Image (cartoon, rainbow over all chains, first blue to last red; front, top):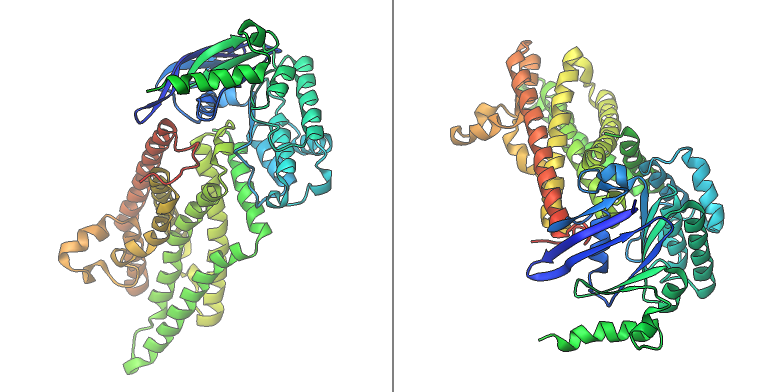
Length: 245
Length: 266
């Protein structure tokens, strides 16, 4: 059974179609990259999977259950980290993790919070208010929060965007190991094509709300006559813009 | 309904209260200032023209009880605004948290701050003006219940307006108590209002509490009718307020306002 199944998803804002009849699925142990230019519909798609945005039509099933009817049950086994959402700056790292561990129904939350503080190298500022952290430290905290409930499905929207290459590498390896060891699944967006090539089993290219291309990130460039994934990204991102009226 | 998740919302507010003393000013300043202003005015009124009537028995109680409504309403509204200001609603509602659990957490926070505020006001009233809030005996409980329920209903209304119109509508959260105050009969009987607008007072649950309190203090008679109607209206408005909030929250999810952090949506 697929961990995530998205079928015929549509969303319009005013007269603009943000997501246009998208369908895809993610199986256990899979990392799928959702790629596309700014405004392509990636964040809207992720928001609908999280139940933060209601689709106009189509459905989303997580672990075989419809998010619209089993929201709380499904979200307890999911988590997310996004570059555009920050945890409240007026609470400390430890307080934030404690609050979210209670929200996600983590058993023995205190122990889990301390584990994650150690694991993500946050012990130096565990009692510092998040508003005083650097963007890199905040990114690590966001990813630590995403691991709180040992989710079976992770939604990561540019998770390493604010991290230095060394920290980004460590986070990537940790995520890969997590997926391998737990059979979890990740939907991952990024503008770093090297990262996508390294971590993803499959990619979906999305532009103007439509999935234009899907496949193995290591094979897709050659299959489409491009030298690498970045070259392919640029051609896909620009082509629809050029042909637009 | 998962109580642990409501507790998480409550705990967040406790962390905020503990971390910043300026938040305590919100809780104490207005209540103490109002008590002092009205208490001293009342003392003065007692001396004017050889007054035979002790205004303290009516006016000080009215000030304290009126604060129950405003404190509860503002407590809920500000707790929600903290999440709007911190752009934290996306994090919360991407978790398994349900709207009802969130509201329960906010209401618990508001009850905590209201109880603290009530305790401080009652203590000060006793020491400064020899006013005993416990003169109402067991009637204190239903009176407090009606006022707190009505405060929660008004808090839900304020949250609904912010959910519908965005953070710019936060002003609404601050003006509600003052807006209803003239019609609530806090300091004067409803009969004092012009006949044509008395119907507004009869639609406000707190009016029945203040009418009932005056009856107990001035004539020693307790009106069960006032209490039942007041309680019924407070419960009705609470239910309506929650239904309205659910509707507009769903609209915010449909229109994508939640992921834009409840941005201004006029």
